[in-house]
Image (cartoon, rainbow, N blue to C red; front, top):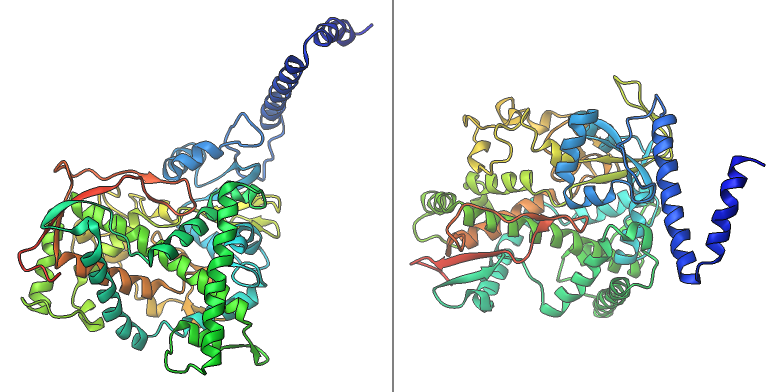
Length: 511
């Protein structure tokens, strides 16, 4: 009789004498212990020499997911120090290879379509939120055509018309908001809000981007039920509007919806109405995340640096006139510090902290022995390289003046500035864009999935900032220079709540 049989006999007898609940508990505990032991042995005994080092973890399913989700920048930094720029960890049961730094940005974000794929990663999140047949629920070639449709409305002439509209929206919000009644007070972080009911629906759509939905996007969970209801409701609002405009032959309002209604795919195929509605959802979601999160961070940062807020006000008075006339698109070019505020805020608070791609064919990592296999997911972290002291002196310091070329804190990409007009260009199907991804500063991504709304976001954020600055002074409630931490619970990072500041109307407030 073998040793195992000798040991198993008494154990089996003791197990059979336990109650049902105890047996279940023992079984679950045994499963976890065996899983841990096997997982540790696998990491120790079966290391693959041509794969990046695996971050040690105890559990085979969740792996390093919890640590990564709480603070991605810290997770990347600690593991870069241990393993180098390229390493692997378990994210929601999937081997995920991180490649940080400028070379990693270029390797992943400029990866060829035969090697990397975004659709397979993100469709489980975006399709329930945006709807069918758009963005990642269609072939990449069709997505590139859709981006071309949307880009039509992002021209200089369009921006000229947008600035007064955005100015009026911000001004009207500030006049109506209960948070800004009186001469001073404590208000929540500034947000570019929609109509209240539509904002609530978009909040429920936003919940669909919770990381857990990479695995449970199909589950009848409360937030998924609200997501699905919101998607149907918002899509119907757009669909009804499209039908009404077609019925009356609307040609007067040449906005983005009008452009989509009059666009055609290759072969002169009209864009179906449901795709127009779903693209409108995607556009508004994209604009909401960039403007809401980034404008909130700008206000919180200004509250920690009242001196910078006065620099901004003085810049407007000096370059636009003491009477501060209505803002125009051309005025924005006269306000370089306003532009620097947006740049510096996006450097430290990029809305998306991690960008993932599925690996479609084995990918050798140049200059290393590593080959990324097809059962891995690739992860780029441009926000991490934007805080690398190799490129940004005192990287954790929010200092907008660093973007002035002669500043001692100027990043190397400013000191040795290269005109993007001279960069290599590529057309992925929606117009020529700079190919350069080998950069530490990529708040709008790079490659074929680079955000087409980059210029609009800058115009929108600078306009919001200018209107706020000419009407208010900010400081922290406690008078300190502290800034609240970051909430990484969603794929889109944002300030932790509650985020409050003390505001005071300027003597010549225009509200």
